[in-house]
Amino acid sequence: MNRTLFLIMIIFSLSASAYAQAGKKTEELKILTSAQCGQCKTRLETAMAYEKGVVKSNLDVDSKVLTVIYKIGKTTPDKIRLAVAAVGYDADSIPAVEAAYKKLPPCCKKSDDPDHAGH
Image (tube, rainbow, N blue to C red):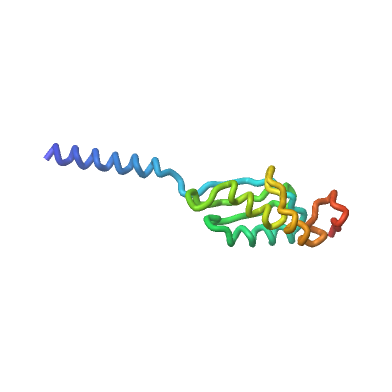
């Protein structure tokens, strides 16, 4: 009887250890963008909703920081940054894709861009 109880305890501790090593399933990523306004917020959050592995995103327009919750193993921080750049915004050190940036409305362009128009 004691031997059976001992084996059950060992199996339980090993499975608990394996579960702990699996760790969390999501990660939070903060990306500094070149976003300018509420339209940028809508555009980026909508684009992130279609990205594989992204659970949630939120752009703080004032700080220009896009916070993304993503599933580990489904995507990577670099893939998310590339997706932001593909929408037309800088993502940390990755510059916006030029063709996508040119399609942005004037209010969404960088403030030092001659085509930028404020609200």
